Image (cartoon, rainbow over all chains, first blue to last red; front, side, top):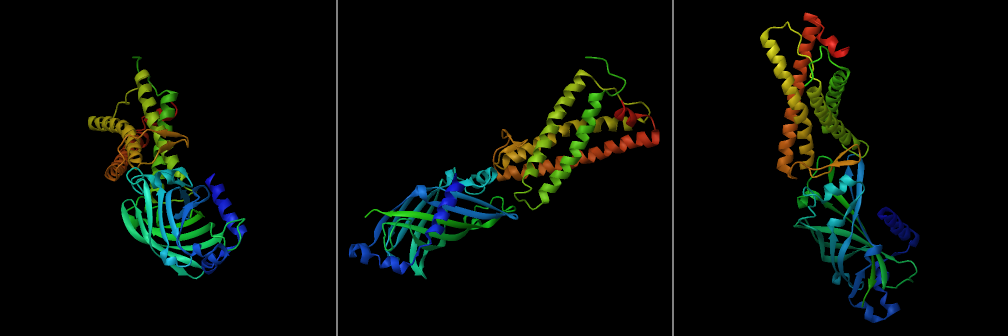
Length: 206
Length: 178
């Protein structure tokens, strides 16, 4: 089901083809009124969002996804430095591409979901990067907090018009090294570097 | 208890050779999976190693039970007393290890925290705590017991060859043909 969901999200992103430049989004207030230039709260549409990860397993890949437990998003497209992002991931319900991988990942040698059921990401700074943004923050995995940087690209959602800031899709990519967090189990078989690929669909609440 | 048969029965011989083949092949497989680059295409070999190992554990149980029901004949006379004693001790140790090696492997697999899956469908209950300390110790135990088993198999084969090629007393023939 998740593979289908993932494919659907990526297909819909591709079909959209409407990468929104941050500058255009910042100009969004000209469509919707100056009130929108202020930081706005967003909620995550968790059912249509996906936090995917991927790592090397010998010559192959282990892929999977992790549900978002909670997200607190304040975005300001006119002044991205005002953006604040807080995301909690549900480690216990993470899925991986084959059963042993999921079990190994959630077990005590890697993420230890029994002891650390959440992964936390809290932004520390957001700055413009070309058409998108670079989101720096603290990632807490297995009780260890380390800085992480994610690259964000913005997309309009299907059925929305240019400049509509009420419904957006954000594609975030980044890397974490398991060893930074002491999540080193099976390092003889599974790579240290884990690539993150996140599609977040967000809706403005105010 | 029934009187010992003068020769080895069919089931006794089948169990002997089946387990001989199983022990050698699962050792080779275990040594291979411990060194290979693991990926999706060869992950199943771990399952095969466990499946053969647990099958050998079950066969060892069947074999002990069968020997209770139909005691095998004693050794053919001839060799000096110390050789007879060595053969007897070797056989006993082989039987102990036929249980100890798969059990230590099962315990090691349990300590990794992953399901011990055999025949690609049955999950065995864990028989050791999930802990990296236990995992390391049980792997060492499994490897040490396996090497001991192989050394005893070599001694057993040497004894059989000595009887077959030097004494020519029919010991090997009766394990093959009954």
